[in-house]
Image (tube, rainbow, N blue to C red; front, side, top):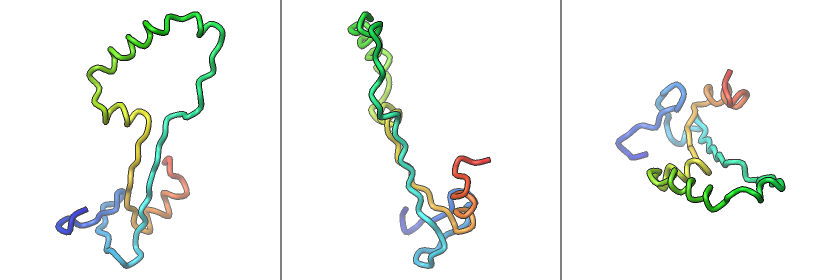
Length: 94
């Protein structure tokens, strides 16, 4: 946010005034499933070298940022008081 650009509610685009207590800063931290995979005996019979090579080939054209976004993503949104009250009760939407 720069001094030239107004701060806007992410949902309704209302202009938000700093220092007046009329908005919330919401930080969303999304992380891909952090639990270790469940391995079976069959998994140890697979050609893991071939699978790794295939995976590396698939990721060849993926930027580091795109790869990171598949594992972890942080988003910060600003919500006016009215939008926050609606959002906090049902953040996933209707």
